[in-house]
Length: 161
Image 1 (cartoon, one colour):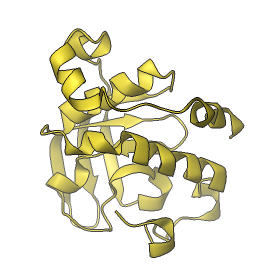
Image 2 (cartoon, rainbow, N blue to C red):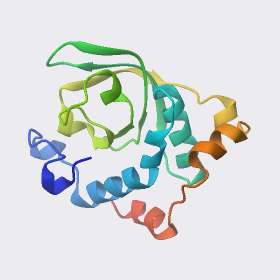
Image 3 (cartoon, rainbow, N blue to C red):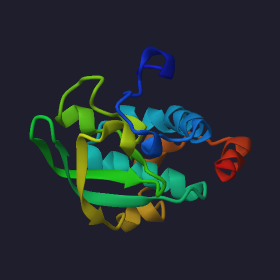
Image 4 (spheres, one colour):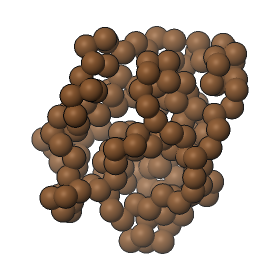
């Protein structure tokens, strides 16, 4: 993954679309913390539900979405698709590149929607299956996210932007 210094974020955002630097730093850290979910041998729904479980367990507000994603430059579609929206213009999506293109201009992980205005998400909020929601699918959860912990100071930083 590219770092911000290497150009992870496109420069095509208008000033009103740009994320605050504090928020960007927090989401960059969230991506690192949650990033090992990317290694799970699962498609977008499984990875999205695992990430949702982890975020919920740590009190981080978000919503699961189901629908499709579109690259408006090429017309390429990913149907069906699942992703997380954080409610402040940020998205958590670890599988979009898998289906559209393994390219730096296709977002991956945590990203600000305004930085990728050509990526369009269509759909709505969906329910996380009960086995993910309440942790009853212990083997699946244990195998993929039991090793991930979020530092308390990291969680407190979320309240600063």
